[in-house]
Image 1 (cartoon, rainbow, N blue to C red):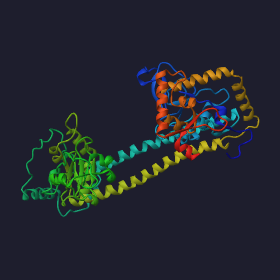
Image 2: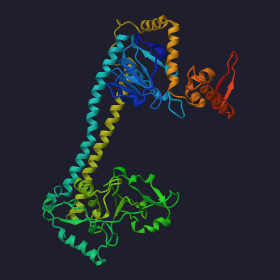
Image 3: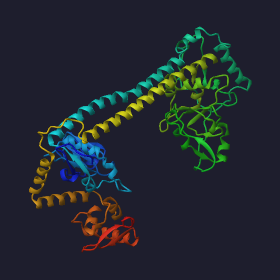
Length: 547
């Protein structure tokens, strides 16, 4: 620890702070009263009675190891926590911020269930300022953290604003407002009406749309009106703007077992938030793929989720050329006469997403049928305007992406600033020092005096009570007990660490010794007797080797 300011003192955590064990309070026994119940990561419920009088610091003992919470209300820390509620000679808020700065999570030694050994925490060296300075430090941190919290709250709201901005841009793009100025000064080589006729004629030339057993489109779901669009635009249906001979279709019903080698197929789960996660894609057999060859993908195709999370959308990259899809998705192979990038934007727009949601059916598994997908209405401007719309949206979205990156960087800086404030505080650099403050050495003497004047028998009884409460909470194997302890234990210590109470019955004691003999037989643990000791000690085999 670096040199401390005058009046400060370097002490161990255990010299000034006591970690008490939380008490079991199962969720079924909580009655929803006014007092918070704390688990290792914060409030987990409420109850009408309490264990600890406020203020209380709660420390994660199992699960979210080392997480630190502060309760200004009487509360009940449960058995996955330690808690601190004795602050006779300490500032509660100062202790709270100090414990947060100590990174207690790094003391976790368990390989199975994460756990914090309080002795490891007690051994940590901490800076102890005078009591009055502790109060000033805590007040200053509170004030600064409140300001940071307000800034962070505003920044946390910005992503939602970006989301609304993107949707307003898509709305303007797909309603003609974004390119209104462009249409006034451009003469297209082919009008939207001519384009619409051309793509429908292409399907007729190929024999028209094949009949299928798909349900009829949902009544009133497809409600886009020509009044919503510029008079030069048309309204097409999705099946007409797809490539003739490559109709909208779903894919594999039962992909079979996952294979290391085979044909990749894309599920809805593979593109959360409209972003493809290639690493998670599974593979099916060539035989199953052949049965659904109609659904094979080409680079540039669009893939739309139609069951479960309806409306997700991605564009297929080159590396997934020839991949297949599942029954929860629909392949859209857009005609070369139409801009795929434009159609992508239309399908993401709130107006189209709303029409899809209106067509959702089902109870157990909800989705939109292929008939409704094929009937989705697509605002149709000229090809030139489609390309211009896609270009403008891409340019605006790129600017929004840059702003989002800056916001994310600002959030990281705020988090670092919060840690910097704590570090500065415990180096003695946050508030002015007052040489008239009673020094920390005198404070420590009072703490020691208080502890020494507590009758030894009472401290022993309290220790036994705490140990008994802890032991009643959970019985673990002797191996896990040694892992959590992090050092060799005597048989009595091992009994306690494994969760057995000192007055355990015959059945529990038999369970303990059976487990002990089994692990000795398996050589998972070893028994040894150090020099000058009259007791056997037990340790993990690998722990002994390490020593």
